[in-house]
Length: 154
Image 1 (cartoon, rainbow, N blue to C red):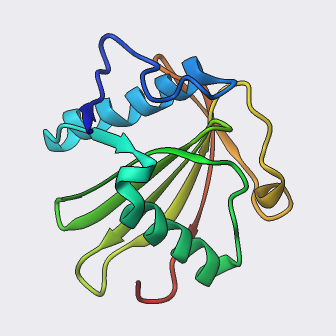
Image 2 (image 1 turned 120 degrees about the vertical axis):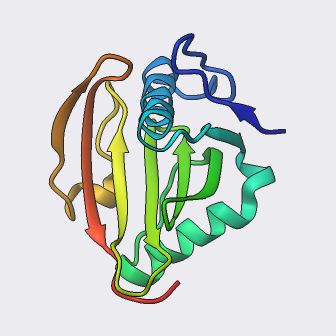
């Protein structure tokens, strides 16, 4: 069952099993606020098992593009289209959030972004491959992020 992510009253609902649940909830709320402010899009998520197609699409891109397999279980996911972009997010128990930006037009941007919740370690499968930049967020504390450009069609 999907639910709207509230960025005013931040909730850990759906993320309780994460050791950094509060920080992950803040990260999720930060993304919800961004899409509401920039695109007037209401950010909704659903349990990963109900969003299996989205999780499989994201995992397929990671595997095909960079031979990456995420060790942590997926907790929640969402997929939507806004401003000519197909977006997908997967939130993991470890505190990791992965997003895919896939412009529908062939000449547009296509990338995978990684965001680490405050208090989590860099996952082993990403540690040697990416450098993470820091950004501050009122909702999420310090977010560390990195990305790579998608080269193939997905």
